[in-house]
Image 1 (cartoon, rainbow over the protein chains, first blue to last red):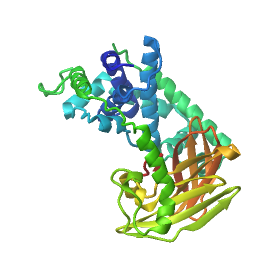
Image 2 (cartoon, chains in turn red, orange; image 1 turned 60 degrees about the vertical axis):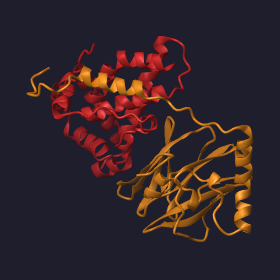
Image 3 (cartoon, each protein chain N blue to C red; image 1 turned 135 degrees about the vertical axis):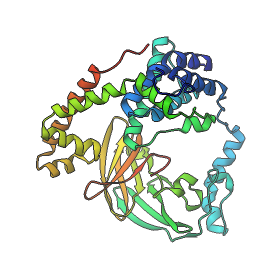
Image 4 (cartoon, each protein chain N blue to C red; image 1 turned 180 degrees about the vertical axis):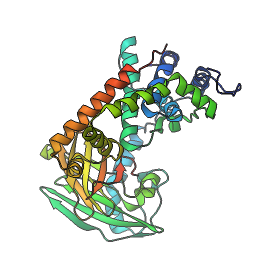
Length: 174
Length: 206
């Protein structure tokens, strides 16, 4: 994909990606970093497809991979930004708040809080151990005094319910 | 959108426009490709380095070291720390000031991979341990992932593309046998109580 195509995709997709990342990290600064790294990686090339739909899917693929890597490591990858010498714009508190407002973060927090409250105590505790404390499933199972498959099932069902709550609260972004 | 009491604050679209301008200014640098002659020289030098080290005291040519690699203050004696089916893992202790870490080398029949104390990247030197390595052992149709872990680590989760596997820690190191076609994404070390002790990708650990 040539440079102009990447920049044109940036014009089309950056707003949606900013909302996507903000809603999943709950942090507008991190979200802007992730948008920047997504397109920095795209500028570095590697795309082999031909159609517009494939190009869009490729950008979203980079975005999802970066988000997954962030969740896994707890820090954002910035290799492409460093390599290209790109400085992403700094945000003031007011600008960060505007991005969070665009992403509907307030409503999202309410939706997550409601969904968490609606979970059973067992599922909520399993989610806390696995997602917040990042414990391995055998450890989660041991802490809760249940088998590993049961621990996996509780976390999986809890996550599914939260995901349904988030989908219901997803805003429309032009 | 202007209810935040700061009229000078940019809107999200204006912030994105600024980021777009920064992306437009960036010029991707083409990765330098060595000319065929130079590549041949590098290959020959790399092949000769162990022999040169055996004969001549001192450091190997800078050509074979990553940019910014520091020379260690002290290097220990290489010692075999783990052996397994058709492999042997050798560790060398490298000291950089008050920080020490292991440079590992895995040998299989006909092939080897590893790190040298004087050829560690700055990121590797500053991390708690050197990043893990994947050696594709073509002769035996397998790959071996190996690395060092911080004290207190008992288990390592080896994250591969689309799957993960576990490896036990022995003598402060681990070796995981995986399929030749698997690709290493990273590793996470865990203490006995399940607390993560280290997270690594193939370039750095934290």
